[in-house]
Amino acid sequence: MRRQVVNDPDQMVAEALEGLALSHPDLVRYDPRRQIVTRRHQATDKVALLSGGGSGHEPLHAGFVGVGMLDVAVPGAIFASPTALQLHEGTLAADNGQGVLHIVKNYTGDVLNFTIARELADDDGVRTAEVLVDDDLATDSNNDDTEDDEEDDGGPGRRGTAAVVAVEKLCGAAAEASASLDELAQLGADVVKRSSTLAFALEAGTHPGQDRAGFDLEAGEVEFGVGIHGERGRSRIDFAAADDLVAHVVDPLVESLGLARGDAVLAIVNDLGSAYPLETYVAARAMHRQLDGRGVTVARSLVGPYVTSLDMHGLSITLVRVDDDLLRLWDAPVHTPALTWGGAR
Amino acid sequence: MTTLQAGFGERWVATLQATFADAAAALGDLDRQSGDGDFGTNITSAFARARGEAEEAQPSTYPEWLTAVSRGFLGTGGTSGPLYGMFFRELARCTDGDEPSLAELSAGFAAGLATVQRYGKAKVGHKTMVDALSLAVDALEGSSDENDPAEALGAAADAAQEGARSTAEITARRGRAAYVGEVSRGVLDPGAVAMALVIRGAAQAAGGSTDAVDASWMQA
Image (cartoon, rainbow over all chains, first blue to last red; front, side, top):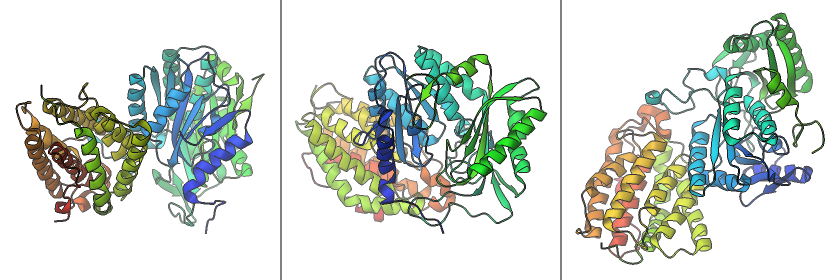
């Protein structure tokens, strides 16, 4: 049986956002009427960055609002897209006359509502551009069971998962350095092309107020290629030692990105909700050793919960092929509730 | 150019509020048989939001009333929320005047169909609201301001109702019902039924009424 620290399950997202703002009053504000999270002080001299999507993936996206990353986060209900009107309000709140970059994870509902929000913004004379994040290798050229049957237009494509953190950080740094809206859209698309993610889970997540996980696994099974909404994975593999599970993820990532000796990557070893730090660092060790064995340098990494799926017990690994320009953007200062480093605010 | 009678927009919205207050539960039942069951509550919450928008904006003209309904749906979740929101937005924008002419309204329905298809990627026969709306647009095609609006809209509503009824014979290809495939056969598509009720509401409002429209046919 699973239980949660919860008052009213329906109010959980709003209460957590209020808690986030109370915990980081110097960084972010929560507007319960418009249901958006904004920076404490609106930036006035740069293109604004907005992201959003279903909740249940915390600290994504609200935890990444602040200097050097997002200007506005628009959270939906758990695993449900924010509404078009919410995204529209967020876009108006973000804009300071220099346009708004929308960072969108590739899901049917999110894409629909963001597209509508851009059309509404256009009516209000606010310029927008979009970066579509679709990094999940498990859904590559593979029709995801949870999406519409879209055979007429080639299917919904890859899902958007943890690479969105890299896109938000790198585009955020470029925006602080005065990149234009078009340049940011191009940079974001480039980062997405350089990124690939794969995940596995030992146990599914549990919705607030429920005591059963989204799917059941036998003791000897691992859900491989799992999504961040409790979607079933691409296949079930045998439970194995950490090094073997990580190899199962790293090998296809290396192949899909065409990584070769001498290449450098940014790595995100992501806890999907209830992997504990000892496990996560054992996985990080395995990834380092395996990439090192291939002559691939892990130039920078994040290890911990960044894009979760409620309390799913599992991990995802994201690799982003980087060059010196991208590393400079990565190293630039960032001050958000969930990611903070570098110089003065 | 003759326009619809003054107050048409307000009457249409009042008609829709009354209609869906009665019909939401039955639409939710249809959705539970083929989709994920949230259509009834989504439509109820969209009209509740529309009421809130109207209280805030105090609309007086047709474009203002329809904008309140559009915003109500655009602030609602699911896939039907945003699609109905964009449909009503095209209707809100069909005229620069206080009330539309029949020709403007007909063009608004056609623009609404195009927008719903552009965003929803649904074609006729996919068991969606398009199956009702496209027949209504066909029926209105060629109607001019010479025609009696209530009569022309009534014919469009008849066509939409036939289109909605025809969805019982279709296995879903788009929308939530696509997930259950063959199970959706024999069940009316709630999105198509709701669209037919919307158009019937326009016909009754054009005739001066604000009564809820008869929705009993969806259970036949």
